[in-house]
Length: 217
Image (cartoon, rainbow, N blue to C red; front, side, top):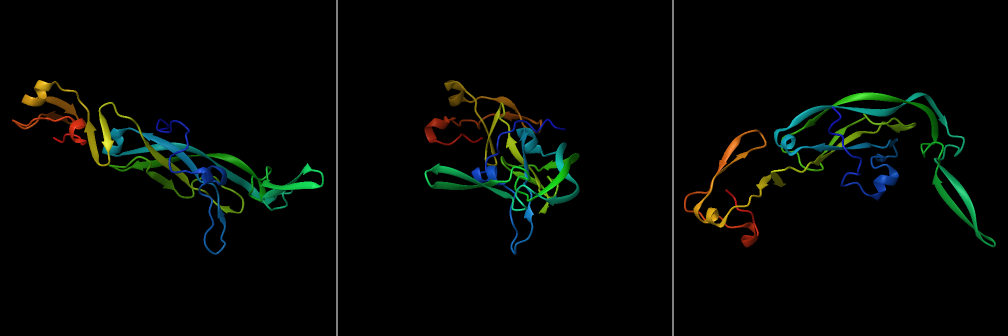
C-alpha cells in the first residue's frame, strides 16, 4: 500500500513560505485558532491509473498529543525567543526566532506516533499535481486545529504515451514509403484494449515538424 509514496521532493505549487511557515498553517477570520502544519506527501501514479482510476490504501504516521499541554517556559508562551548580539562598539542587534523548545506553538506537550490507513481515491482523468486532502488527519499541535494530510499526485513517465491535457500522444518513426502509401500497427491502450492504427486510404502522413502540431488519426 505504500508503493505510491516514492521520493520526498517538495511538490510543485509549494513556495518558500510553505517550507518555513508550514503551508497549511493559517488563521480563520475573526482571530480563531491557528491551524497545525499540513503534512504533504508526493504520490507517484502511473498513467494507467490516472486513465482508469484507482483506489489505494496508504499507511501514514502522525503525531498525537498525550495529556494536557502546558505553557512553554523557554519563551513564556510567546512562541518566539529574542537574541541580543553585539555587532560593534555600543551597537547591539536584536534578533527574533521561533522558540526551539516548543517549535513556536507556545506550549509543551508529550506526543506519540499514531498509524492510520487512508483510502485514497484517484479519479479517472486526474491530472498531474492534483491535491487529495484528508481534513483533520494530520499532526496535532497544542492550541491549534489538527492539520490535514495532502497527497499530491505526481504523474510517472510512460514508455509509450505522452499526455497533453486530455490527449494522449504516441511518437513513432515510419519510413517515407509508409507515410506516402500507408501503414498499419497495433497499439495497446492504457485500459488493455488493442487498437489497430492505420491512416485512411490515400492520406499522406505529414511529420509533426512540418506543421507544428501532431498528426491526429
